[in-house]
Length: 200
Image 1 (cartoon, one colour):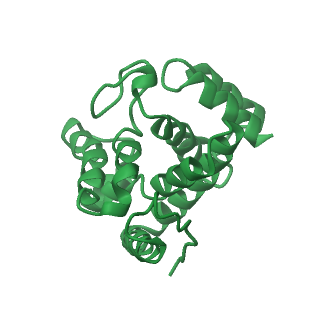
Image 2 (cartoon, one colour):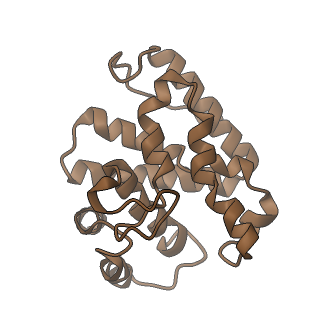
């Protein structure tokens, strides 16, 4: 089982670091049982998100919150049938509706877990678009929590243009160019720049 070393700042985790550690690890284990590729994807997105947050000079506490939210950003996939996940992105209208609900579903799973409260907005809104055409709330621009804007970029990169996936058909420059082409529409331009800088 994948074990995490979490910060034990009582202001960040009111229940204490040890309890938070156990809860997050248990949730990650559920994701691993659901789909091992999804589990690996969650780790990759968390790693990229930390790099972006550090590049943007966010506080250590905020970087840790973003890391944890990135690890759990697809928690709601536990409610999506594997048959639908396997068909992505070629879904019917009904299947897409089921898939899109994973943002709200993942957030709802954390509503009664005190140490996860600050992660919920990042998880709920990681599929919002900077131009307001995303889901579930069609938030726009800076109305989207920064952590969610960061996860949106890193999730897209790892899902579609990461060299570790079978989708890879691009050089790093081409991948950066694709992200820049979506800057200001799907993604926050500042986050895209920080991500490309972090890639090196």
